[in-house]
Amino acid sequence: MAMASVVGIFGLIIYYLFVLMLPIALLVALQVWLCRKGTRLGLILPGISLALSLLLVLSMASFSTLSVGGGNTMVSGGASHVLAQEGQYMEIPAQEGVPRGEKTAIHPIALISVGVVFLVTNIPTAVFGGIWLHYKGRRDTLEDLKKMRIEDLE
Image (tube, rainbow, N blue to C red; front, side, top):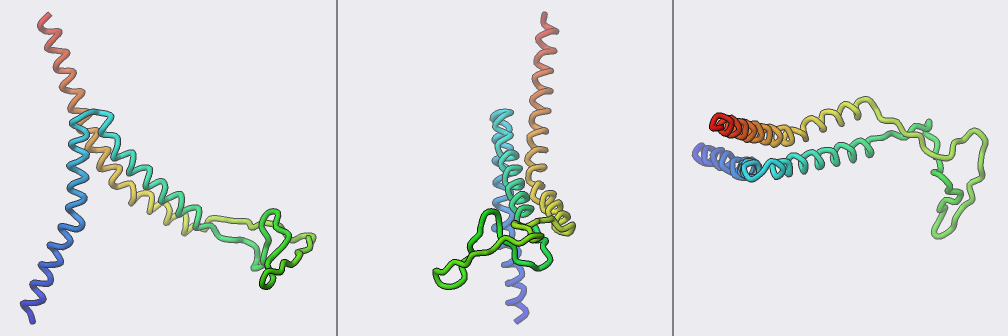
């Protein structure tokens, strides 16, 4: 019984190494390869990572709005008919003092969670950007050395 649990633990460790770490290692290797090929090519993965994180954060922010209306059912925009029963529409009379549309507000906790999600989803952007900056600085240094050698020969 104890042997089976030890084998299970090692199996989980190996599983997580291959399932989680292998794709991350392959993406880092791809970023290094792209940075060695060219300066602009190295910006592909950070750009994709930033775009995906912004897409996630914006969709999360847009879906985390709360309806503010005191529990009243409100009709949106220009809708003056509501489906009452099967196929029958009911006229909704305009009432004074009752707004026609929902007011939305972002809750402070939702705003904090959007900020945390933004920071967490931009970790790959920072890693890929750091790799790009390293290779860009290295390339700039080598170009400067080449210019200095040419100037020394003249």
